[in-house]
Image (tube, rainbow over all chains, first blue to last red; front, side, top):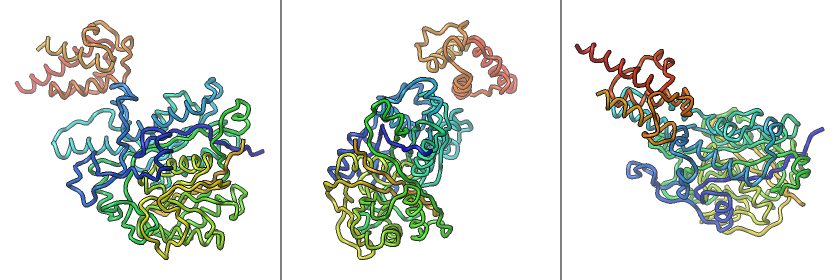
Length: 405
Length: 85
């Protein structure tokens, strides 16, 4: 028999603050964490703004020795996990830990480490690298460190599917708990793309805005990169109920698809297929959905495509959906994006308000949805979905249900 | 040179053992200090850099104590001098 899966812990490090409560307050206030970039020399870039985790202090969380082994993206994974686990209060027996999975998403792995190492070789003419370069850079560093730090011995791995990584990670963890393969899971994603080489790669692609991220606005001009991490603690409802755990919400469906189309040009057919798959997986009628946390990158290509996909799946009901892009506040954190947005969606369902699309200026006829412009809205929504659509056409959608205690 | 060598090794070991250099003795076992094989690779790399020498891969496996690390490094330094001379 399939089990129900609930979320009992949330941890977040983001541009909105170093923990989940600052993240929640930022979203509710509709306050973007977008500012002039500080981690690299921004005078060398066409774009100037990013959503950096400015409130995050590595030394507040790790010893100097621990930091030697941790790239910034793995630090985010560990800090978010620590908060999520403290929040959930999972059972800590050996048996329980052996039946806990860890699935993390990362698009680019340890970019800070790779960037600094290559600069040393190519720019400085040095011949040696730090022996920890490989384990710091590996994309699975987050999952490995989480499992080691907390003794989780169940299935543990990392999914890398660009901007869909965290949704793929959470979705697979959800399926593992639902099927009974494990009783609990830590799932989410983390990313730290603010290094010189990685930002130059994004600059070359010409998708980053030179001012700010305005999803669904007529004058939108691209995405704003973000960094951070978010982790969820997933548990079978049975276990959560038996121990009287507080529940944020239920994960009810997960759907995946591939556009099989183009490297960077998204297809509404692929996006619609993933949304339909998530609804089908959760046994949900389209009319049950009240809120969509959009992929909503603020690029010229994504937002009309996503609007078209939602209209295809939801028909007339699309006009009744509230659709917002929280990337307008926490930026596009790539492999962490789906995790930040799952956290945003769960907090919205739990607290009875919908996060806005910030920086909204002017409606675009090609994005004619209720995008919750600029101010959070009080609303009791029962079912929400969260979309992630990656470069390379890989799509992953999660469906959540409000928890009624 | 010997004094500088011992001092540098103690300083590096202390960093990985998370103690002060005064607390490190030449006959201390890496294992007792909580310095594992990955730490050893790191500290030898730092010392290679500082003294501009190369420690061969197989020499690493012969390091059990702080004194062993000094000996391996000394050998590498002597080898470097021989090459020059």
